[in-house]
Image (cartoon, rainbow, N blue to C red; front, side, top):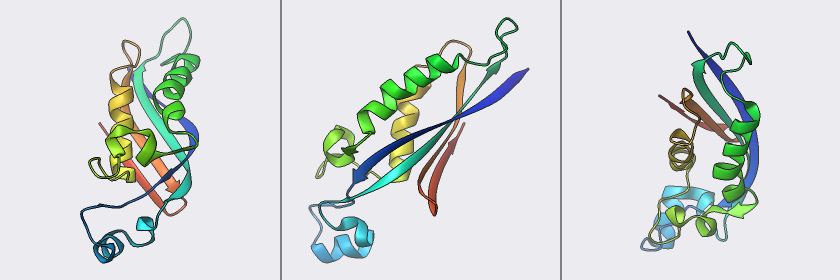
Length: 139
């Protein structure tokens, strides 16, 4: 019988919402203060939810050390204390996606889903920018 496990991680990052092909007025109209250069930062909180059968020998769905190392390598290290528009080609100003919570949670999902140990499935992510804004993905 599968059990769901939830683990929280933290990282800080900056981002800018801006389309260079749009006028200053259009960027401000669409993105508000998020379009003010050079950008602004958040102390993100990320919840990673995995599911799997409990190993009868260990009592675990997943080895937490292994999960922590994976999230650290695939998510925290590339993002923590970085400007997302500069650190990640996917969010590069001009030809990348806007580094919104929605796009960022999709980026995180792609980085984690295929790297989990056998028998463990990524079933949810929750990314909070602050107390008032969060994005979730569920399998």
